[in-house]
Amino acid sequence: EAGVDQMAAASATASRYKDVDQWVEMLYECKPLAEADVKTLCEKAREILVSESNVQPVACPVTCCGDVHGQFHDLMELFKIGGKLPDTNYLFMGDYVDRGHYSVETVSLLVALKVRFPERICILRGNHESRQITQVYGFYDECVRKYGNANVWKMFTDLFDFLPLTALVENKILCLHGGLSPAIDALDHVRDLDRFQEVPHEGPMCDLLWSDPDDRAGWGCSPRGAGYTFGQDISEQFNHNNGLILI
Image (cartoon, rainbow, N blue to C red; front, side, top):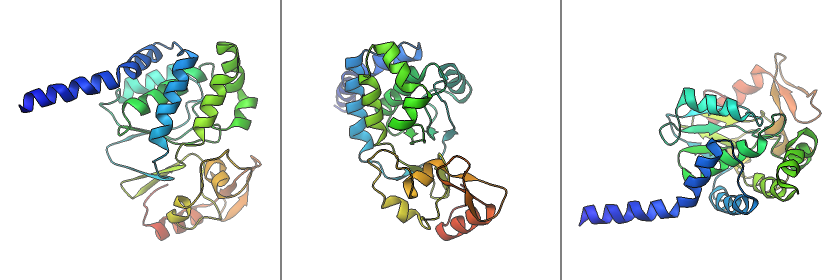
């Protein structure tokens, strides 16, 4: 009986993920999905991401990754070194698009992997996961070039509003794209933010995606024109207040 139940469950899982598995296979070969498939993919991803926290808990072991910026072949190299999902758990800290020439394929693959293995991969929002920035740094133009219109750009930038802002590994390590904010003393302040919007020009949500650590103590003006610079003293105080060992 148990064997039959297991087979039935495996078969149900296979049929449920059939489309997604095909998309992942295509994307591993750097082939962009059809527009209609991107629409379905983004709808599925949205259902998963909407229930994730602004401070998404992540368990060890996990491999943490920085900016990919449309560099598809570097993403492949990363998987070659670290191992493919679901054998390795991953945490990506934003900036999937812009600059590189394969933003479409890169972000499509990472979102498809999130849909296929939601417990094995966490994808955070970077400052480039934004409507405004992607119109300047390449993702918008790439979408129009590859699809003949801006629909796919709109689907993905709408989805970006649902990406978590930070991840907390084993309650001890805070992972985020940018840095700290003078408006945030506690992780509960991050949890209380309304993240389902375009990245604002200022304020705590903006800071989490734009701020940078700095050699100078205290808070400083950021040369980026958004967020702040913050010194070691700020990091140590934040870690102490929140029972963290590392940002």
